[in-house]
Image 1 (tube, rainbow, N blue to C red):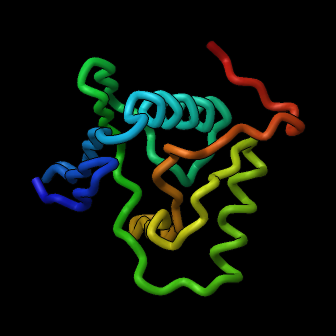
Image 2 (image 1 turned 60 degrees about the vertical axis):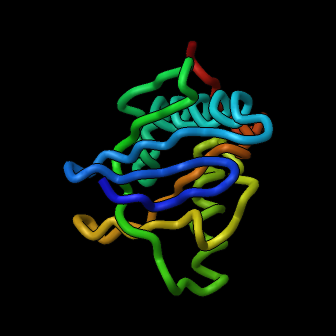
Length: 132
């Protein structure tokens, strides 16, 4: 298992079989965990092809396991970054942490993806609804 992120807010590891394990910690960890689960479920329901898929949820440990969306990108111009986050909004979610560190590149299909939905919000006027 490879450590990808170890901050005050979360630890992230990638397993050898390509799953991503994220454990939330620090201020408002439970709220950030709940929000990320909600956003990823919503995006999955609306068939967004460029975000991770939830595989496991451990509410007691504030841990999720997702599919991998590739490796982080080192260089991405502001215009392309804006396009990616605008495309996400077509699925009814505003990321609210629009930074290059939240973009990955999935080599198998040549697709930029968006990760890290702790602070994302739903856009109410898109006519999309979360299913329970």
